[in-house]
Amino acid sequence: MTDATHWFPVYIGVGSNLETPERQVREVLDLLESIAGTRWVARSSLYRSAPFGGIEQPDFVNAAAAGLTTLQPADLLAALQDLEQQRGRERDGPRWGPRIVDLDLLVYAGRMLDERGLTVPHPGIASRNFVLLPLQEIAPELVIPGLGRVASLPVDTLEPMISRIE
Image 1 (tube, one colour):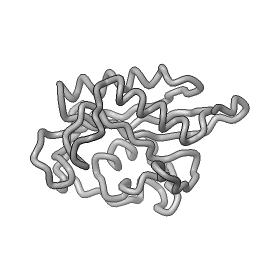
Image 2 (tube, rainbow, N blue to C red):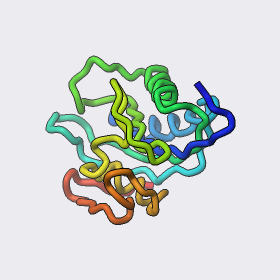
Image 3 (cartoon, rainbow, N blue to C red):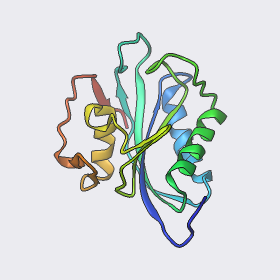
Image 4 (cartoon, one colour):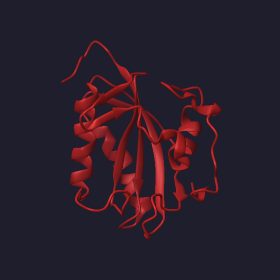
């Protein structure tokens, strides 16, 4: 459902570690433009990071994007999950396992939501450098409800290991 009279600021995280991850991330960032009622206004550099969650797998490539949407949170999440599915994402693998593409709704209009299948802000933001570094690049002044300003959140670049690749 859209509300064409209100544009809500949103931030998403993007990741991939299968089938040429850099290409996957770039292409899905471009495909975000296909989401109706949404305009993307910024995207971060790409970052290579060691896997999170203790499963042996290839390194990830991550990025973040900032946009404005008229969609409600659940509808935006559904659109992101549709893009994942179009790119070949399978949801029956292990949690934190390898994936072709992963799109996470990180922040939606400064709201705090905890609904079935949707928690905003994303609960892992503060502990994941592969989310924080891209967010700090595109939105250092963003205030994440319950956490504070993105620029003030500490980032450990060693755990998991991360580096900017673009």
